[in-house]
Image (cartoon, rainbow, N blue to C red; front, side):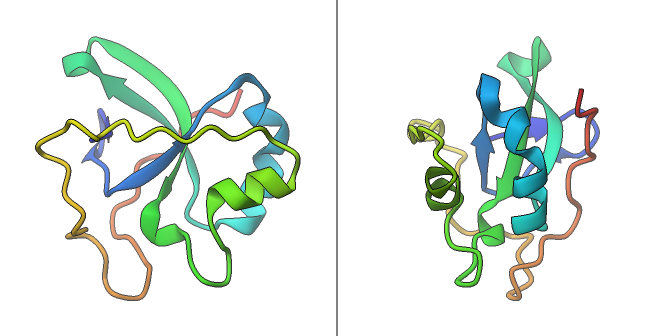
Amino acid sequence: MRQTRKEGVLPKSIMVVGQGTYDFKEYLKKHFDAIRYVDLVFNGGTVEKAAWVLPCAGETEATGTLAAFLTDLGVDVTEKNLDENDENDDDDDDNDDGNNLIEGHAEEGDED
């Protein structure tokens, strides 16, 4: 479960981190309308980290998966499920309106 201080818990999402991620930011934003750079909080709010976050509903038939897109750009992608032991993780997204649109995106953070 990922969350921001302002918006709280985010819908089920894909998080992208890594030193070279910034180099691909324009490609990410152009290809995935719903991707945002946000400040996430972990460990009960004691740790804050910035990352690119794409709601799972942002992966559509037209866009394909984020992992495949990054791989096509030459990025070495390693996938890890950070919620595999989270009892609160729910595959049903209550914010999905059925049209792959998410209500209440997290606020964008600074990109620098």
